[in-house]
Length: 636
Image (tube, rainbow, N blue to C red; front, side, top):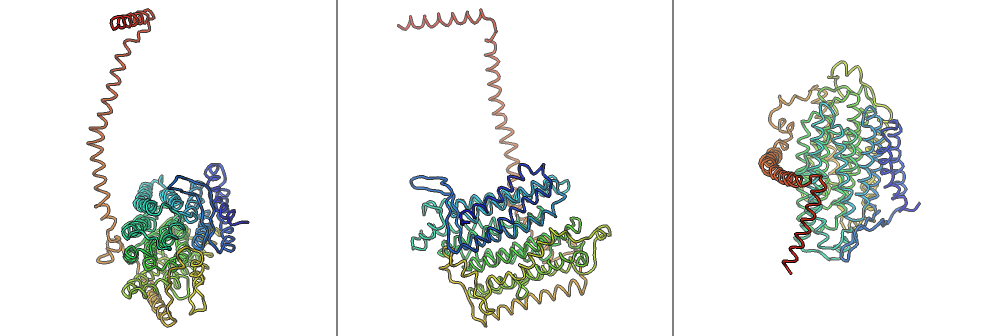
């Protein structure tokens, strides 16, 4: 099958699944609904593998013209190259496993068919985002992902206990993303003004040919693009929505954090590498924002006791890690970590879902403990995911983090040290999470303990597959020291515009060994520290009331949410209430009431002329005719 037909089929499959379940899902059995939604995803992934095997050059697929004017043309067009193909494999592959897991996790939910409808739509929007050949198509998918995330985060809005909180979390995600989206929209208008086009290739070729806009214009375009990326990829200051997005069902958390939404901002920067490479000021901003985000989020995760909140702040920290790489021009290293992160973060979120499923929806890790005896498959797969994200030697996260740390060491030793501290904190809070949940004695109630059980096959099979990928994912870009040839670097550089012009950092064998040695010592040191504290000493995380100093700051997330509420939410609510009371109620409502009163009175007056007596109407008709005749006689 030709590539254009393969790509169009891949795009159509999740949309077809959403249409079938959205229109007929309510009357279909749950097994049919889940099978349709999951089946189209696995078929899409199989076709994506065919695209990967057959495509080695950039391919363009024209769909239709959206706007065609003398000086402006916007096309619905697709672009298939190394970057979009890699993202295609991640989105459809990890997305398929999350769909399969959802069939078991959501089987008791009343909104089963709606959930899978939204999930398929989410994937469709993400595919539009990554496959579009221009910023217009990217923006279309960008907004689609935003609305689907809103629907999925607030999915349980009718829940009696947490419905209002779920709705607030969804609204928070939607609003904070709109702030970033405004930046992206401004960047698009600036590009249209400067280049007259939104096509990646046309903008990129103009830049690479030396047709550079003024420094301030390029700075403005790239800064606005980065503002858009901070919204979707949860960077300071637009990061607080992501931990709150845990209000959605666990498969949604896995989908947002691993395969789709949060990678959109990274994809945008990598796709626009030809712009950012000529805007060093913006790159510096990206570097330091990413550094602050990584360190702050890792600190916040240290004292979280909700199993999903720990993973949420971990995602924010890892995204900051990736943005540091982007700020240093390490686009391939960033995409390498995006790929491995998709494996182990999806594994960890789905593993947490399996734990929550076994614990009857309990998420507080202080009420867990000793679960390895009751859910062995979840235990071993969660351990693999923990070791991968902590950077234990030769797992996927070890190699991808090492590439970013190599860029940091080459760029600035201070940056490298701060990044190493962030990596150390990651290992500490992840091993804390693992030991508190799975080791020691069970700390929950007897009823929960009696009903502890392993998840069914459709939930454990995705965990096993993702665990294997977390083990071997580092093979994608193995350094030459271990017999590799940096495959991903060559693959992306060969067919992705601009990346072949970016010099990658390849350290000597001795420096590589030193880096890997330091990373290994840090990860193993964190493992030993967490083991001694939470297993040997049998420590249990304290309640928030017992915490003091830095631990209290971490548990309360540095009071960032409270600060935002004081600076933005409360003033806006006060202004809204004042406008409602004094402008709407006292002025607008009275103005409208006055208009309606005037109209009512005029109607009452006219009504008196409508007597219904024919002789009266004839009298007035004759009077009118006589009056007209008199008027014309007098006039002429």
